[in-house]
Length: 514
Image 1 (tube, one colour):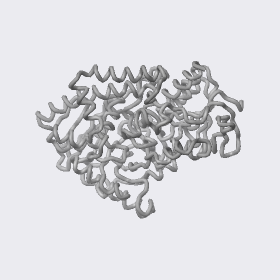
Image 2 (spheres, rainbow, N blue to C red; image 1 turned 30 degrees about the vertical axis):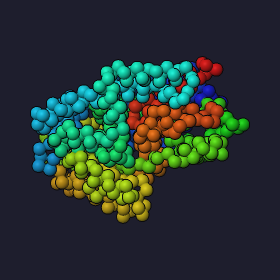
Image 3 (cartoon, helix red, strand yellow; image 1 turned 135 degrees about the vertical axis):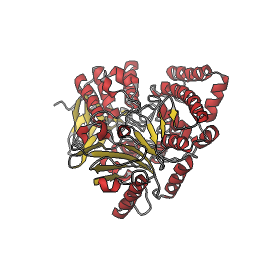
């Protein structure tokens, strides 16, 4: 096997796989080194109890970019399915929400929802256009950056004067105020609030939560799907695309450090002591791990490393997996409804109250929950007649007061199950095994600093021109030959592939310019 490559990608998360596939398709000799046994990073399917498998972290697909699908010729089965969101009510009068309508609310709320979605999807489409481009630098004299900035200004004007003003008014606002102004139905406000804050350290009253809602819609207008075989099937297809293009992928190969000589990258060294040489090293790891551990702070100027050090990247979402001997009973749900996305967020005030303890390093005693039963759609994930429940739970702060001891983990697990039991009273009797992944567990298993799914909070000061930090918004680090391609770069997290694609295009365009 060759020891010198045109490019080395550290980490086979989905963005790393997209980046390596596109570089290999351009004729580059690419090596991908993955620390874990399987590719995919946080987008993997694995067994958590005997016979029960689950998408370990990310469990729904709603942001995979059309450009990535097209360029890598991914199969149509990865298309989003537009699952219905069912906002659960304890009295069984649930609210059903799709991309086009809401069923169970008043006619007034239903009409307001159509208007709200029309405006938000239009704004999200504008945002999506720039998610799939290298972000321009502010204060730049680079012609391409100036063109992008000019195009952004033109696109804003194309919204029309009133809509442009509305976009600029809303982008930094909190979702709570907008929902209170528009809707009356508490379940509707609760469900949209949850969508705006899922995976963040934000509550509905926090600034920027309209932006995070738009970011979610910028995938496929928020339409979600559950791929057959779990999210791991998406990563496996991306890996196959990379291999077919000529990339070499090696698993169980943790990288110890990125080698720097005379101010530029020269390769990587693995934990086992193997060295692989390349003048281009692309890290799919988060920015903090890349710069502070793999590269080393001594190789960058102090101001830059200080900004990286202060990057806000502490996770606040946990994952709970339950092995069940059968589907639980939920009043008001037909059996077919277990194929949909269920949420526990009774109103926007409930979501904010759930967030309040996290501000002080405490977990939520009454959390908000996104529930799926993936085995209902895919019988291969559980033994015959049995089921898997996969839940994203907020809020579970990475830096929990007292730490995530066995007692703290058990208490939070019981709080989550107790919350679910208010809607599914027989859930406890059906559990044969469980697994809780706190942000600390996510950090350990998937090598993400702080256990934050986005590798860094999605807020205006860590978005677009300044993601992850100023001076590093265009994938290239201030060390020659070192690049980032993961969720910590523009545009952010979610299984979209946009960061990996943008990074590959940036690297290839720089080589052409040289």
